[in-house]
Image (cartoon, rainbow, N blue to C red; front, side):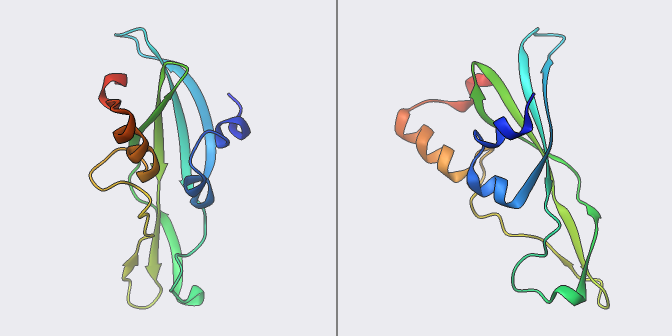
Length: 126
């Protein structure tokens, strides 16, 4: 599947912080339902407010799987890998703030607001 095409479907905030590594259409063996997996990796940019020379990227945190709005009746799963930033001297870790993700939800705030307005329940797309 074309990564550039999927970037037009995902929220702008997500694309500004993450690179699309791959997009794959798969099929669940048990249910025989097709779904789309999008691999996202946080860009190598230190969160704002921190001195760039004092911090270094030390790999990634464990991958988080988030269900997004379905496309053409297929469930969409985002596999998100966030960077681990560490202070060179104190070894303190820093994480980016992603306030555009709805609290306690598996959706972006924009999508959560949209679904609340339409009365649609995203759990039916599992």
